[in-house]
Image 1 (cartoon, protein in one colour):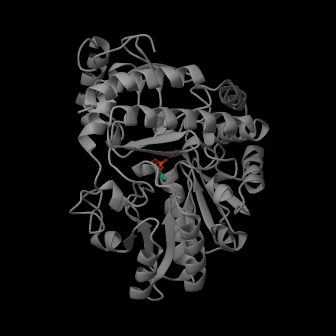
Image 2: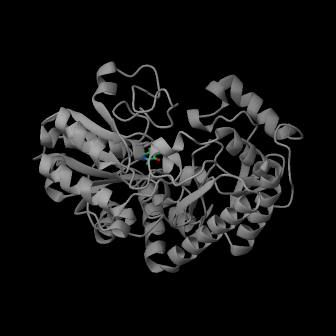
Length: 438
Ligand code: PLP
């Protein structure tokens, strides 16, 4: 990134666009979590870089919350979409070849997938997974973990980044959600099997499913222990509940077969989204055939509908992304090595300046927690110095490195980042962290 910048000043075009947005779009952004008070308006995207309206380039680790996997405007994906543009646009009846090929590909590469449906987003996939779990078990409650995020819909929109006094308690993300919906989702602690077993004890024969991000990236990167995930598999089986892996972030990013391939535990259902189509709107739900068959429009009993489900452009983008990953296993060795390089580099700098911090992550994902000691569960994150992250983020943005603005979130190395850029990032981080050293 060439040009350091001060975000709030010297951005006349970005400011004008943001001001215009604020008059016709609530808060000036189309998703509540995009607001950060700065006039971000981007006009171009290319590989690892974003260019704003005032001509400044940023090295992008935000990656649209992880939807960018291969890099912005990856030619293989864009070419596939261009080709698909000249084919069938949308029919609303029957199926297209691209939908079949996408489902075949998912069944081939995802260990738990015997059949698959394509949605438009991750939220739709988790909503369908939960409805399916309730239908097949004939039970009403769901278990999610404090810190896990599974989309904006009522069944899951609670207890993500909770303040200390709200953690594990009643912490819906929004008003307007029925109390019954909030209360039908129980909260457990990640990496703490006893907290899940206790819920099964209290709510005997009422829990339909346990849903988890195998690595809760919505609060950075809490790495699961194998015993914990194996324990969840065993417990849900014993209790007649389904195990749902929400691989919307981990899927395709950490391994072609998702994090389930890495940890060797097979869930009943898996949800996908984000990186699956490298920035184009596609989500997916895959799993055991006997469960998925409930969506069968002729013989099943669970409604699954969506005008744009399996649309040709989305399927083309997803297929091109997954085909690329399948044909280029070096994508994983490269992004994992770059992720390790930035994590190790950051740890070294933080130690050098005596800053209490924990750098966590997996593959190309890294998270900087300003706390001491390991981060295993959300309880550990309550000690995070959020203000220190905000200062770190501001310093990095001013130097042209775009990261997630919220404390406790993660950042992403894409297939377009290079070793040289990682080293430039570390140089900038050294300058920024030096100012944070006490
Ligand atoms: N699941 C996880 C793990 C996510 O991180 C998100 C989005 O951040 C979702 C589900 C919801 O996906 P979408 O925003 O595509 O609806």
